[in-house]
Image (cartoon, rainbow, N blue to C red; front, side):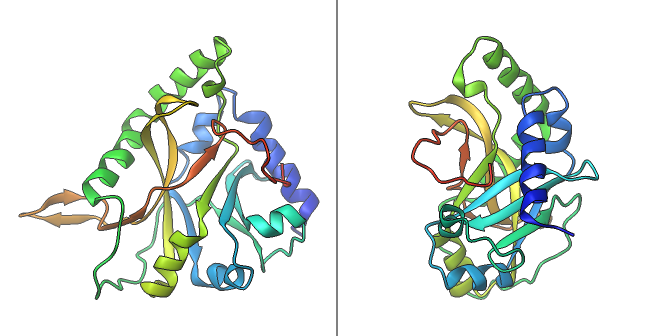
Length: 230
């Protein structure tokens, strides 16, 4: 039966494996994970700033993701199934509800989301080898990600304003240029990832993209953060 000790062990499994050669096999073993309205409703009562998304490897040697709000994580007041959720890393996504009756305020055009997701699909192995070289040179940006944070305001827009029942979180590669990293690194895009084969618009993977404000730790600095499942 899943408990906090097992969850921490699974997260530690990823922490131990993330800078090894086999890590890329876990990251490319699926397409992402699903966040549901049930998850959102439970977190909404707490009004957190972010959702912390921990990568982990379970006893079946499968990549899983643990989602918990930042307030619960700081206070370590975990309740599995209420504010802490385990998500499978899905190989294939089923179709999600198509609620597209009103315009969507988005900060990421579908074409850009397509490009970033395609970068991940085609270039993840090359990116991983680049990270290995950075680690060999003891450059901090070479450290592989342990978790992502997603702004809770993004989820509010989708589940309350847009009335979605579920949402897909997909890996992608984004180009960063800041004090921590200059180059491509992994991110999480919240999107409706349906195949669109419109002869006029062209082929698109992403029907609607919602947000690209995820932050990966590392390379972002963990100082002053309360990631207490690590």
